[in-house]
Length: 379
Image (cartoon, rainbow, N blue to C red; front, side, top):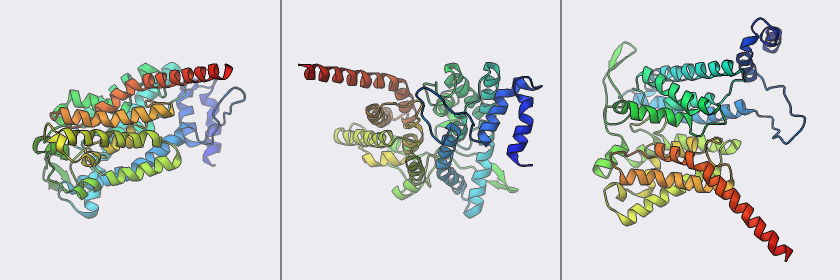
């Protein structure tokens, strides 16, 4: 019996009148994950496409894979392992975090779907992977669980679920972890601790990230090539600009992410960096502007966070504005507050809150322009 026939056989049990009808939304979630929904629109204005939201989310997951796979390897490299052992070490370290993130987040989403009696939203397919990728692999699992729960409940469900949230859930999880458990996510002791691997003791490694070195010394100890390739300490998936750019190509090719937002973030960051170079003021402001783009979470945020179609601007003009302001604000935070060298998280969350306002003014400006044009044509 093939999978489709098996699903059809058990489906009456989970639909109205069946013994497990109260689990209909849960069953629908599994069915639509396995197969394209058989529902079609018959009237009204709708976007008709062969891809539903779940397939779109899977495209994002595929785009995250280069950064994820490199993160596995780099995690092992940072504790002086080589070759496949380095990759395997990183994979073993990150998989429990991914499991905790998905189990916690999906359990909450399933519970809310059952309580409200609606279908299960698919947004957490991406958020569940993003959350561990923007945290150090040394983060205790219970902290990952608490941060994920906070993000899902207060970042999504209180607003009505996927598509209604104002803030990016993955960044909310990181923000919660940063302010609630600062020593575990920031500073020189945030990266690794002693850990046994394949029966042998792996020596603990801790050290300042490139951004922390910029803040304290005005320069980093790593080469520019190592920083671009990602062989530096940092959050699991954020170190390799090259892997992130490969993901960006996938997102742009599939049309999932907006090139307007993505490019504008980099332009805004570069512009603010050049302004700081011209003005000076502290060691951080004198860092070559382009180096800001390849260290910390700047590239990862520009490609995977700022382009979130739910929390970013919806109008084309708004995408340029929000993207530029996101990049500029991130470097502004880095430059004027060296005590907090990573500004991308706060910048994106701040612009998430402002994006609807930007869209409002863009739309109002367009309406006003059309009215003025109509009046001129009427004369």
